[in-house]
Image (cartoon, rainbow, N blue to C red; front, side, top):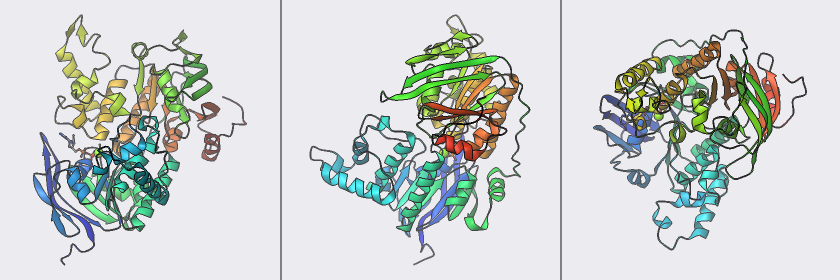
Length: 511
Ligand SMILES: Nc1ncnc2c1ncn2[C@@H]1O[C@H](COP(=O)(O)OP(=O)(O)OP(=O)(O)O)[C@@H](O)[C@H]1O
Ligand SMILES: [Mg+2]
């Protein structure tokens, strides 16, 4: 055998071009059998593209794929599965209206036709789930699952197909800290059983924690492959960005202004018709960031939806700048200048088929300066797109590029540019830095602080406690649809927040 011994995957000279971009520019990558190999790189560096090449979704213009020493042709995901390669995508591809079980067998020969052996299927899924700590109710419809559980289904789906190589594209950006720990335990068990895992992430802590080796990509090229034990976070950050990275945020003292939002005894149901909010009350002032901390599924998403008009409350009242807005529609809230940075950006944040230019004016094309009566002002719209692309450093060949062709991080930037361009009075931001690289994360945090400085009231919902602690002036902890307490961020300690997230009510004085 040649030197491919020991490598599960070898990519040689992969070139993948898209109109106007070379997404992969001659990439060589070797992944050892049984290792967790991280792929690291800024938004748009080409990580997802490379993995789609390996998974047979894209045909590269040049290059070779060698699995276990044998050259292979990955002509489709089916071919990839035949070679035991599976992928969990950045944006899940489950069918929401089908059950977990149906999603897992979907597309397999045994999953079609009238003679599905559900008993056998079920036994196999359950035994995989038990072995790797991936428990999930098989009969539940996928749309009813929290994102963390949907991810388990995606992993189960791959394991059910008996993959040897599992590609995971930013698997942790949608998970709570606890879910991340669980996932890492699962991944460790999988590699102990001989699987090979490629893991894309932006989080340097995770690279250090979970990987055996790491490859850094920049602008479509490999910068370096390193054993994780022989590197550190500053080195990786520098390799990724191409310069020294200073982590700094300028947060001025709070200048609290008038009350913008008042929420009184708010009650709402979740998608399954069960209580999600049970009497939530708080005030939010201009110039202030109120962080909402909580374990996923404790009502924070429903709160964001009620406040942006996407979900009806069943009891309680909401006031925006003293005006009652209880159960106003999403259009009305938008007209009242409430910005929404949603958690599920592909589904709720953009229209995938429309261009960047069009996505940027989705919510305001009916108004001047973009339109007068029924006429759209193309010059304004184009200038708006230019401005947004440069202000937010949206990387794309042009503003005519359809949003669905952007990298994950760049989609998020389009949403932020649209939502924050009109000086909103209230910003409801859910995981605003989800999927962003370190540079862009810092940029977004800086933007939120600038909005605070300008006087916007911001409700920041995030499961990233570090983010909540860095940005917030006060921290509201939510558990089981109830407010466990509101703390002053300056003096809040992370232990106490952790206890409150698990259901302990705050003893101190309410702010
Ligand atoms: N189907 C496509 N058509 C055209 N351009 C594409 C397509 N897919 C990706 N690109 C472009 O290729 C480049 C690399 O994108 P890719 O999605 O691989 O980046 P990434 O490293 O995964 O970034 P992120 O961290 O933001 O997810 C980007 O400039 C992107 O806009
Ligand atoms: Mg990506």
